[in-house]
Amino acid sequence: MSPPAVFLLAFFIGFFAGLRSLMPLTATAWAVRLRWLKLGAVLTWLGTTLAVVIFTTLAVAEIIYDKLPETPPRTAPAGLIARMVMGGFTGACVAMAGHQGIALGGIVGIAGALAGTFGGYRTRKQFVEAIGTKEQSPLSDRLAVVEDLIAIGGSLWVVSRF
Image 1 (cartoon, helix red, strand yellow):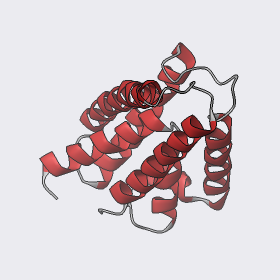
Image 2 (cartoon, one colour; image 1 turned 135 degrees about the vertical axis):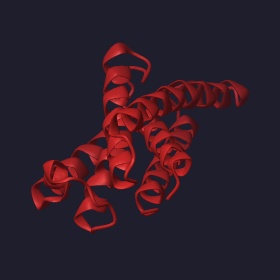
Image 3 (cartoon, helix red, strand yellow; image 1 turned 180 degrees about the horizontal axis):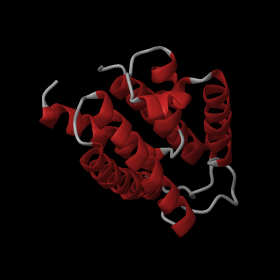
């Protein structure tokens, strides 16, 4: 795979981390487990049963937590930092699997996470305003489910390219 393609995938995995911080990590863990992604020996722990179970459980919890009224916006410092860390880490994993520089993959993943965080927030907010409903409403929750599906499907698509 060409370097531009690998870094585009690193950006995308980061973007999906901006939508749901744990989904790309979970997809990466499953991809290592299923041998779709070949990472260096230092990261083989990602494909262990324990890691896959923990990350899958946390990703499901995040999807549920996202729908609760007391959930802070993804742009709040804690959520933003988590998205940047996950985007950077999974971007580096994608770059490693594509035999490219992991540092650049991490940076590109962080850029993707920022784009996903702010782009997803703005898009969801604009949809909610356009339909004239409140941020916490059944229709807004349906939009959040669409966002969940994009993050899940997109993350799996990225890690299946190898």
